[in-house]
Image (cartoon, rainbow, N blue to C red):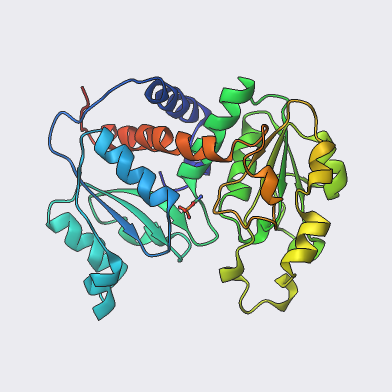
Amino acid sequence: MLKTSDLSIEKINNLLQDADDFSKGKVLKAKDEVYVANLFFEDSTRTKTSFDVAERKLGLKVVPFDISVSSVNKGESLYDTVKTLKSLGIDLCVIRHKKEKFYDEFKGIDIAVINGGDGTGNHPSQNILDLMTIQQEFGKFEGLKIGIVGDVKHSRVANSNAEVLRKLGAKVYFSGPEQWFDEGTIINGTYVSIDDLVKEVDVLMLLRIQHERHENDEKMKLSAEKYHRQFGLTKEREKTMKKNAIIMHPAPINRGVEIADELVECKRSRIFKQMENGVFARMAILKTALEERGFEFM
Ligand code: CP
């Protein structure tokens, strides 16, 4: 589970089926002792905690690993850290790192790796939980209109979600500040103005503005108030959405920026449902990754 484009439609459907079974109460436990560690070199609340919960629900042995007190701070490389954990008996690592494709370094290490987010690259477990949330709502992907709004350039969620949704038959549209869409940013959809997009789509996916990735890019700078007025989901824009359209956001949310504070928990918001689904999607991902390496569940 390194990037969503690696996954066949059959594999995506199997993951969604497993995630759905777990959400309906299916219980599976690892037959043997399996040791896992979660290495988060970038901050996380949802991904780290939901992997932790998912691992415990599957009966895996979670070995605490805190980057801030590890030998990473003495200069140990990512390769040596993972090779060391393998030597100590860890069978699977979930890793989030700011370096795109960090996992290419581990090709020679006999350990399962799940990508918890690589820079602006991919966030496959977010993709699966997003698909699960859309499928629960509409029961299909074919013909759905999906709008993705905001910081597409820096989002590891946007283009991988768009790619897989298109593969599954949905139509994908993007919107946001045009200066944020360099040539080549949109590879899996069509750019539409925000007011047209909001009226048209079945699923409105809002993206967090990734201020931490804008530091040296003057072109990306836009005040929160201006962003909300020009591109955010305001209360006025929400009123123009289709009757059964839903709102999604991977979170964390900048309330009052990407979305009006009052809309975060409104009737059509599935933002907290996405988080709930995150545990089941990650259980499915862990089960699949471990089964592929010969571990069994009962
Ligand atoms: N959506 C997401 O990846 O959230 P965290 O950064 O809190 O893990």
